[in-house]
Length: 318
Image 1 (cartoon, helix red, strand yellow):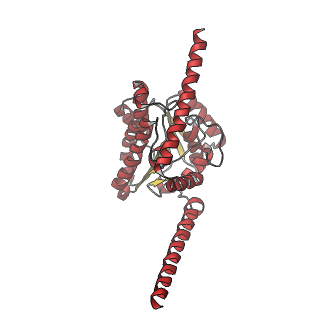
Image 2: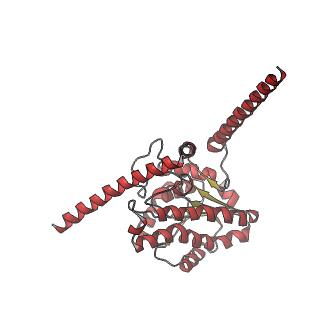
Image 3: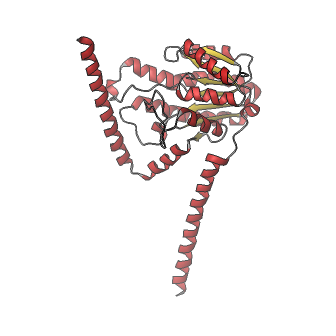
C-alpha cells in the first residue's frame, strides 16, 4: 500500500513539474514576443544605422522602422535610382532623418572593395547598428547541377561573402566606442526545417550566416557589441514571390516591427510570433515527412516554372 502511495505521489509530482514547466515556457514566450520592452536603439548603440538591400521588401521596411525610432540611416543598394526614391519616401515621413547612400552591387564587387566602401561611407559617423539584409535566392527551385555558374556565384557572394565583408568594414568603428549591434537576416531554410531541397546553395549560405553570427557574438559580446541572426520564415516580398500577407506569411512591415523589438537580445531568434509558432509545429513533425513534403512541393514549383519558360521561349521565337 505504501509503495503504491509512493508511486502515486511521484507520478503526481512529475506531472505537476511537467505542467509547470510548460506553463512557464509559454509565459516566457508571451513575454519575449509581446511584452518585453525593446531597447532604446539610439541610446544603447549610436545614432546611425546601416541597412543593406534597403530598397525593397524587408530591408526597406526596416529602414522605415529604424527612422521612426529617431535613427539616421545609411542605405546600401545597387540601384541609385531606387536608393534615391527610398530616401525621398523616408524623409517625406520622417523629415528629421539624415540619410546617406552607398551604391554597391554586392554580387559583382570584390570583398575588399565592399569593406573599403563601407569604411569610407561611415567615416566620422556614430555607427550604432548594422543590418545585413541583402539576399538573393533562386528564381525557382532547381537541382544543384542545374544552377548556372553566374547564379551560383551571385547567391554565395550576396548572402555570405557580402555580409562578411560589410561586417568587417563596420566592426572597427564599433570596437573603438565599445558598443554596437549587428543583425544578420538568416532564413528558416537553414535552421527551422531539416532540409531545403532544390535550393541547396541558398540554404547553405543562410546556414553560414547563422553560424557566423553565433561565433562572432561570443567574440565581441564582451566588447559591447551585440550580434544576432534573425530567422524569418515566409515574408511577402519579391524574393519569395508572395504578394499578400496572412496568418502564416508576414508583411515586410509586420516583420520589421517585430525585428526591432529583438535587437540586442538572443543571438539566434525568430522575431515574428507566427513564425515562432510554425517552428514549434515543425519540431513536432517527423523529419522524413517534412523532407518528402518539401521535395514534392519544390518539384511542383520547378515543373511549373520550366513550363512557363518554355512557353515564353516559344512565343519569342514565333
